[in-house]
Image (cartoon, rainbow, N blue to C red; front, side):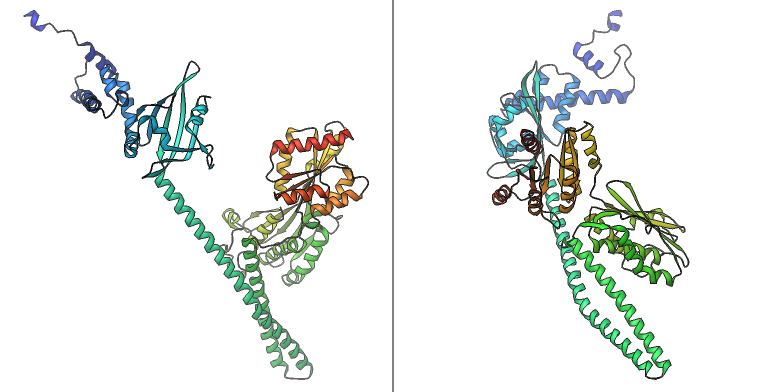
Length: 591
């Protein structure tokens, strides 16, 4: 009886499987659901192992392609789960030896390779790789293996999986496997990008269509604006003539009441006509800016004098609403900035007009001019108008914006948009600070043509820098780039100028060791600046490096014939740029 109740020893394989499932063999669970889950997992394991073994026996896969190898070697449950994860991944995953021979391919990868009907040793040849993303230069399989052997991963999101019948865009990632410092193989993970490429193509086509539609709209608005200006000129011209005739008729003794009414009618016509012409001009300006056909002439502007002119222009509107206008710039000495005079006047007038329109009767407008930084001049227009909410401040510079509560005031809603774009074209900026129902401060900042580096000339004397480089360039972005590049060279102090005229002035003041000169400058171009430098005794021996986006050999030859020490092509190759600067400085030292 006791022999019947004696429990037989547990099979070692079952014991291991129970432990790996998290069971305590001395206190097994009594919950039926847990046992059902355990049995299902074991059953699924052996079912898949049988399928893999069946395929192996038929020669369709090798033991290393799937589960058969692991079933034959008493695979652990963790390995079993890992293999199923790899098989479930929607991307192709392959493992190769160091020579590029396939060792393992998951289910998705085998689907693609069966589709292409190729041998395992030819698998990598199905792919077309590129040296870098976006490059058209191909990378061969030996070159790929050589790169992986240096412990560098490789990615190509524009690779192609192809054969005669089919071509698929794929994204590939290669990661090398190393043991004791030697590459023993590598892993490839690739994803079919066909749908993503279709979406990308559709987005590009939609973008191109939108750009074409926008261009068509701009062309239409531009054409319409020109066409409208012609009849408007006639309306305003004949209106002015009629106004003059009525004045003469009134002086000759005609019925005064009738004449007065007619004069009011003509006045209304002229007022509406001038307003309509202003709107047409704003639309025309916007279309020119959007189409890139807006020409600017950047020069040094006396801001104090320009503000006086704008004050005189706005004076009738200010007096009509009995607004107190305080111009705090009147007592200032001349302050200069780099801008297009006509367009800057347009910007200031627009800000002053808005300060009058959105102000209250008998309100206040204050103008202030400050220079908190050497590189910038700041003009502030402060009013006591209706102000803006925080939400309105975020939208105020958007085109065709008619803010809620402000629609009773005439305008297109593009004045501030044009103002912002004009300032950005002149390397300036604009902002607003406002409190609702209390007023606003609109400010603009304009470049002075000086940078923080201009003070470094004194530092040269103090030993902080050994050389001065004068950069004559109208683009502040390019000046900023060169400034960042020269941070690695504390022995070189940078001085910059936005125009050729200012560059000549600074050259005489600072006597730089080398000059970097943009060819295409507003006003005086680079060749004219060079000619002036060579005619003056104190600047005639300074090496001048030309900087241009034109890479034609004819332009390079012309530059050297003109007397440039060197000719640098944009975009700047930093290493070559610094080498050229060093060569120019060496030539000065040798002299």
